[in-house]
Image (cartoon, rainbow, N blue to C red; front, side, top):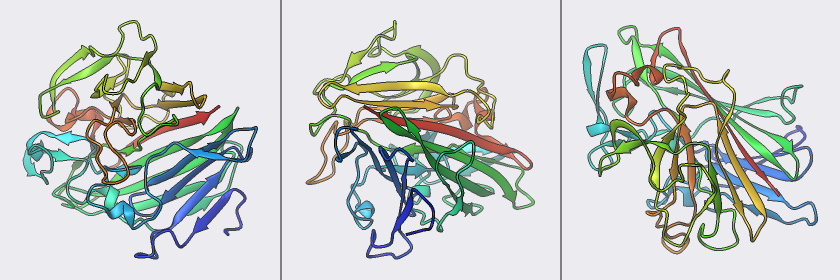
Length: 359
């Protein structure tokens, strides 16, 4: 117990590491639960209770214990991703006329922050901010000092992550807020950063996402090479209806693993939190009657339909889909995009995402 209404801590979540606890937030209406572990600030549960019964349905793919999240075949389930989400071409970029080579982990590119990204960091227990007129639940405020040249990235960053929940008709919503500042060292004037959450969702009642109905608010996507780095072109995605009408996930199609962009986004903004939330996509499943809606202040998001998910004995291809709000992929290597991921001293990187789950 914690002494805060709607917030509990489970200390036996990870028997291999006592610092890795499970922090559970429940909305005041009692219909929605979200939980997070210290390791990777991982979203473990995103669950909703139907008003007619006491059963909670967790739609967030993951494991039952903290030990299992350390499996080699864990595909970033629920994880906080950084220092740079998605891919950096060849693991190389230039900053302040210096060339950097960071960890390469996917087709020779740097993926999701390298070998030991933020998804593997055990964050300290959070500061608990009481509920206020702006938040109906307590806010969990985690922080981390990301050292200079960690995974090869320049600059010492102070990273703040906040999670809170709120009531919604028939369910609730989880907010994920990120804030980063550049602390040092003195000879580093800029750093790059791009943060996201890598949750996988299945709102149906079957082992795959089949029959999930999806409505997108943009079909404009970053064209990528066969190793998933952008060419620099923004094109209509051929598998998302041009009129943005609802489409359905089938057994194998559509196979999507692309970043979608909001055409009217301010791609030079470093702190987007003051911008209005825009809907990335909404999902509905006719069998469960569940709705999931993702909104963000960010200029882009990755929709991934889980083709490569392979967790032996538990999850196979298309077990879940991802909505990863972020900045453009490989923005550090595109001059016209670089401002959205480049942080200088005295500046603040910020982002806000909202995930709503309801009947």
